[in-house]
Amino acid sequence: MASPPPDTNAASATTLTPSTSTIPDSSVGGDTSLQYWGSTGAYICGMLGGIPDVQGFSPINKIDLQGSRNFLAKLGIGLKQDRRRVKTALELGAGIRRVTEGLLLHVADEVDVVEPVAKLTAALQGKPGIHSIDNVGVAEWRSREGASYDLIWIQWCLGYATDAHVVDHLRRCRAVLEPENGIIVVKENLSTRGEDILDETDASITRQVI
Image (tube, rainbow, N blue to C red; front, side, top):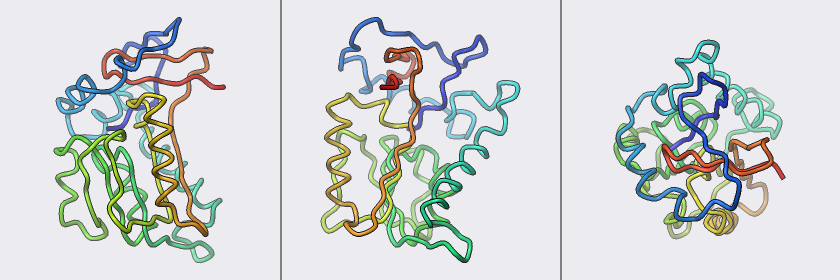
């Protein structure tokens, strides 16, 4: 599952409800999220919450992927001669394979994919470079025995996990990170309203900048 960049203008594809108090854990993720993404069309516009259909936002997928490539390039990872590929990568919240196929398979020899909605990752079965597919959520994910990753990519999925689950998840990621040069990348939306924002449509939370 992947939550798109929130658009708080009138043209927003979803309704974001500011929380004036702590958002209860019971409101975040769970069955509401699974039902929402399970019923959403498995195409880029659907996965990005309809944002590409909003005037001026059609290139958002290409812009997002290029920004991610540029970021990895600064860390010495990429396709050009002075950059390196990594041996193993883990992607959390893979959705419809947008980042898997548009970024990670180009810079990693093997990619492990985690995505709770099985229909979204069905096309990755047997694809070269895909080592494993685990159809579970962030809170339920446990690394396979002996796994070690040079790159762990977490994008637009922590909003479906409670604070406690996020902390626990990051600790589990750290435990399987290659100790010498391993990198964890977290790419998430942040609220600039001074408070967390709950999207009741898919039960995701946009956490405030602290």
